[in-house]
Image: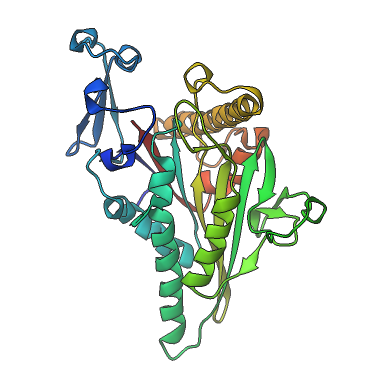
Length: 342
């Protein structure tokens, strides 16, 4: 697969059940059309169609925009279908690549549902954890040459542009939670330091999932007009895999649930929730700047207007989110970006 793959997922109808802002499908005017065979999404006059009017006449057929992606999943898509794109990345992490999966989109568009799942409808995260650890266990047990694996897990959130460890013990005090900072080295790449429980070793799927569930319960969330349980932070789950045979090979698997961008006028955010929304929107805007700079560079290289060996300045350090994602957007990486829309 390509180094960076971009997929779009329309929020599944099952994920809309119980939403406080949508009470009936009759209240909706669909502005999204999907062509699965062509991996194309057509948006018809979205600004006017999403205002809540029930009149089909407000949708101007001529005001359309078409977008083509690596893969498109419609509202009837299932979690296992989306996971078919994640499976190669899990295998790549075991082979020493930096593999990253992240969900991006507006608040309430189904990002957390896609990453974590709901109820018995598990998402990409538990499936990837099970595949990674079970496959490593099987690889270590077979073959005449003994292979040793060391797997560590870290789970942090970026809340108001500050790193917080989600793996700290429930009884841990604020004083015991040291400041977490980003470091960079030629051999290790971008990594985090600080905190007593920033990284923990894991040996099996059950052990890893217990830590993840504990971290999920600590994640910052709030209720807004657009989402009953809106994530107010970016959550980054990282597995570092060290494979030792005759040599040592280190890979990384990152699963990232980005907080959703939101329009304050629609979400009704006030006070501390408003400050959270401003921080979220700023970090996502800076991520957009990085993606735009990378896109312009690769287009220039493909047209022969720039050298592939002379990369221009990319503003990774403008935010903690983009700095942490530096290895996931360039270099020895395999990255899947799932854009969620509703």
